[in-house]
Amino acid sequence: GENVEQHPSTLSVQEGDSAVIKCTYSDSASNYFPWYKQELGKGPQLIIDIRSNVGEKKDQRIAVTLNKTAKHFSLHITETQPEDSAVYFCAASKVNSGYSTLTFGKGTMLLVSP
Amino acid sequence: NAGVTQTPKFRVLKTGQSMTLLCAQDMNHEYMYWYRQDPGMGLRLIHYSVGEGTTAKGEVPDGYNVSRLKKQNFLLGLESAAPSQTSVYFCASRPSLTDTQYFGPGTRLTVL
Image 1: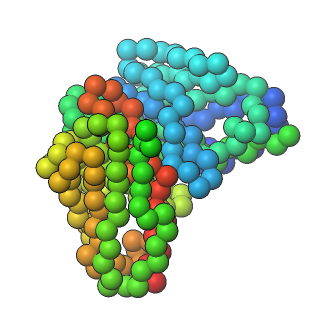
Image 2 (image 1 turned 30 degrees about the vertical axis):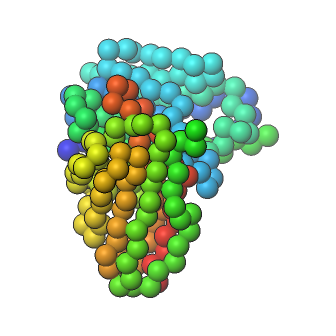
């Protein structure tokens, strides 16, 4: 089955700096890569996703890049703010039917200091 | 539109007791999922359903059973709880035409 590795496990940055979280996946057939943000005491919430036919996607301060050859994808957050502090999860899926499921990385705790 | 809701929010069980966690969604989503989240382990899929009346095993199904008698509800059962089942349980759902999963707020379960 699919295996998703995520690094780093914790990341501390100063407000205004950029943050990068990296993930690798094992199944070359995976074609859907979402990123979730989980605030303390809440369920994960989708913040951005990318499909295998696209190399990069941006949404305001957040961007995701995908390298299919190397089987890795990254989340980039620019101009970080204290409210960006949370746990971030990457995931991978082979979307080909209703039976497709997400495999998650183990998460990155991002701490943004004012 | 409440989205995905989970009942209860917290529960403490003794070893050997049974309980059922309820997940409900009001978005008419076809697919539903149960995950457990443990420190340093991320989210692991327990069971899922691709439609009313269907269930399928995920990555860590042992010790759990599920039922999807109604499209809007997905129940997770523990027949004989064990301390290893202490975890935070999340339910998620997604519509058939998109890949985005929407998560509930979670249930924190402690088994003593």
